[in-house]
Each structure stands twice: as C-alpha cells, then as structure tokens.
Length: 93
Image 1 (cartoon, helix red, strand yellow):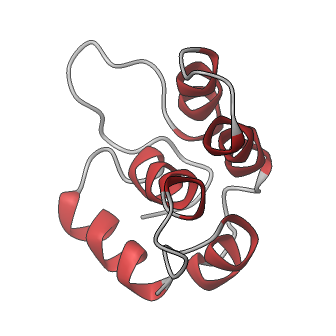
Image 2 (cartoon, rainbow, N blue to C red):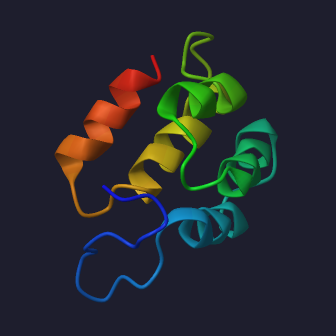
C-alpha cells in the first residue's frame, strides 16, 4: 500500500484513513476507548505500525481502550486488503 493514496475501497465507501476514523469516533459512546480514536485519526498516514501501536496501544493490557484504536487504525488504512491489514496489525504487536 502506498500511504497517503486511498486504497481500493468497497463500492459506496467514500471514507478511509483519518476521515473514516473521525466518523467512527463521532458514533462511539464517550469514554477512554472513544478518546483513543481521534488520536488514531491524528497519526500521519505514513506512521509505521510499531509507532501507531506505541501511541495507541496494542492490546497488551487486554482492555478495549488499549486495543480498539489501533485495530481501527489498521483497518481504516487497509480497506482494500484484508491481508495487508492483518500484516500491519501483526507488526504492531
């Protein structure tokens, strides 16, 4: 994937990356998990997975606020490729 260039997205899906994350945050109930989603949206598109996991959490604490923002960040930047999204997630562990 070329960061900064929208991937092939599902038909009818106009949002990806930071825009998608902001939309998800707007529909997420308040709390620490929701607070992490705008932080994910604020990361530059070319942020390495290890750095995103360092900032957002990678699930080691076994809590939603330590898992969901990074998982959403991975998904939002790889809408066109499940394989790439999974590899990016693994790179952050």
